[in-house]
Every structure is written in C-alpha cells, then in structure tokens.
View 1 (tube, helix red, strand yellow):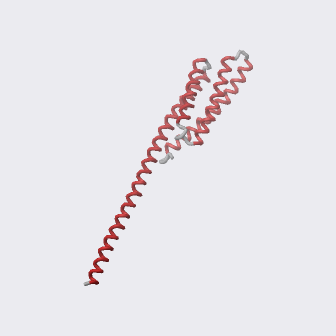
View 2 (tube, helix red, strand yellow):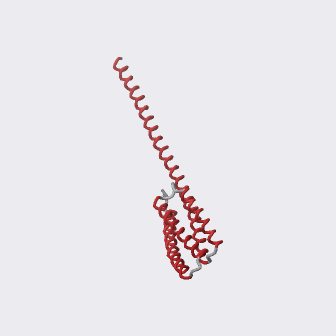
View 3 (cartoon, helix red, strand yellow):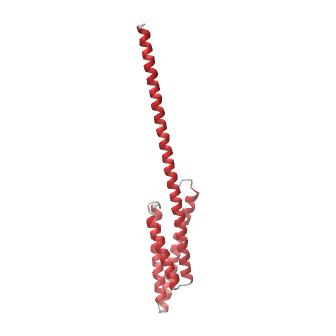
Amino acid sequence: MEVIDATLIIIIISSVFGSFIALLTNITLEWYKSRRVLRSQVADRMQRTQFEVYRDLWKSLDTLKNTADALWEEPNVSNLKTFADQLKDSERMVNQERVIIERYHFEELKRLFKVFKEYLFGKEEYLHSVDEEFARNVVEENQENKDRYEELLKEVEQFVRERLRSPVLL
C-alpha cells in the first residue's frame, strides 16, 4: 500500500508540476504575443504620424516653391512679403517636427532654407537697387539659388514618394 501511496503522490505532484509548467508557458507566450501586438501598434502609430508630418511638410514646401516662383516671375514687395512669410512658416514647421523628420532630411531642409534666405536677400537687394549692373548680378545669383532650391525640392519629393510606396516608414 505504501508503494501505491508513494506512486500516487508522485503522479499527483507530477501532474500539478506539469500543469504549473504548462500554465507558466502559456502566460509567457501570451506576454510575448501582447508585447508583439503592442510594438506593432506603436510602429503603426509612428508610421501614421510620420506620414502625416511628411504630407504636411510637402504641402508647405510646395507652397514655398510656388511663392518663390511668383517672386521670380514678378519681383514686387507683395510677393516678397508672401514669400518671406511662407519661408518663416515652413521653417517653423520643420523645426517643430524635427523629431519625426529623418535626420538627413532635416539637415537637407535646413540647407534648403538657407538657400531660400539667400534668394530672399537677393530679391530684396534687387527690388531696392538702382544700379543696372548690380541688378543683373543679383538676378544671376538668384537664378543659381533658384536652381539649388529646385534641386533640393526634387530630392525631398523623391524621398517622400519612396516613403509613401514603402510598407514601413520607420
């Protein structure tokens, strides 16, 4: 009888221990599953946020380009002010969203804003110049700056297009 009792106790302990191990395994698996789901949700939220930031950034940069083109076509004080205001708004947006914007693009955009500021300065000089030779030099410099910012905008556009096609934006 003692052998049966000992065997029964071992079977019961084994069964309880096996159930405990199975329960622990299930808890561990559920924990890992929940972590994976949480990571996926965070990645999705970041992806949506980055998409929205780049979409809004593109709109702002496109408006900036359009105001620069208007200033190029018709250099006057009204277009100069519109361009300067949009430049300030676009730069502010980039600075506010720099945590979301890729570092490389942030640096490129800073470079772009520097070019835009040079363009703005050149147009201000042009509008206030009376010397024809000086005005011609300013126009040439402005053309170079205009070409530089248009090239940078193409790079940004290409990046945004690639990111929009990519299943993962992070």
